[in-house]
Image 1 (cartoon, rainbow, N blue to C red):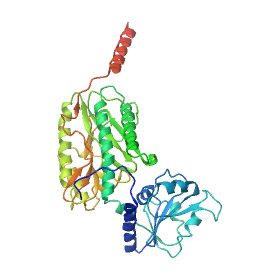
Image 2 (image 1 turned 30 degrees about the vertical axis):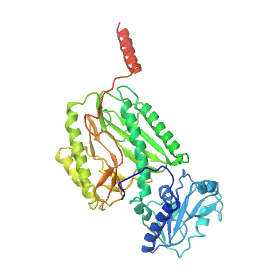
Image 3 (image 1 turned 180 degrees about the horizontal axis):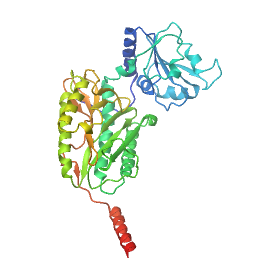
Image 4 (image 1 turned 90 degrees about the vertical axis):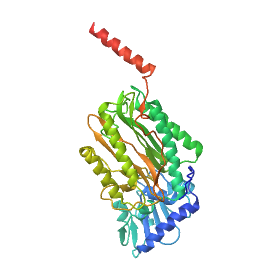
Length: 410
């Protein structure tokens, strides 16, 4: 695996897609499958470079054990598919959904899949799709498994997303100050990243791109997915927990930090340092040959030894690729070997009601012997104690509120 990672923003070439299809077909043959049916939009994107909003009209990719994949789609979308798709495909369309018997999408499906064919399907394939398969089928996540090891091209695409998110996260930290609405910085940073992406690649697929750059103030940072109040404001002190996450033209990553503004509450210092120690242990363990389950078990055991057992809410990490949340997982019970070419978040953390959340996250590549961070953000308590004064507008509002309160008392 190369030491030099040059971020790439463009679409995969035909050779990249062909290699993916060939790897899937090789696994199909070992399982005795005649066809593999993809319904997951993520798997379809992985094998074709086509992404779209999927409504009620089915998109189905049929991968034969030999030859070109067949893409079954609504006629309405065929021009879009032809423009976006990469690689050798055969195109099959149906007119509309719903449709009269004989002209339904399933009728077209059955012109390819015959009762004697053995078909593989994704374990999360909807019943509405699988029940139309005329012959025997088995649930097997071949494409999801192939996606676990990234090609050199995929690593460069993920590195590109990491570069955007690292800059967006830096913009969030630079603009954080007591009293400022967090959604304001989300808007500024996500807009800047989208603009940069489109400048680097004007053909980026906006249907497969999204950015979130946001933070939780200390009063709710113990609840890691609580973003119910879009008008939340940064506060004096902390811990705040930041999040810069997203997809850039179909490839995901994230970077997160616990940070403080102007001062660090004394009771937050020990948990912050304990979080860093657990994180260091996770990095030490997340190397080729180790078991993913053991990484999480040992990190959790360390946190429990420090008294944070009741404050653990999630695993040590998950992977990225054509999504920003996918297998494999650094999680207890997930008995899989860590291998070069995998990409993980390393984000052990814990959450203390009444104090806040303590979590860093980086997007990390597994190399031949160890691991390598692809995202960049401050790491020390000193760097993450931001010096920031309220804005003139915020100060004027506070003064006005004091004057109004004083007047109401007279």
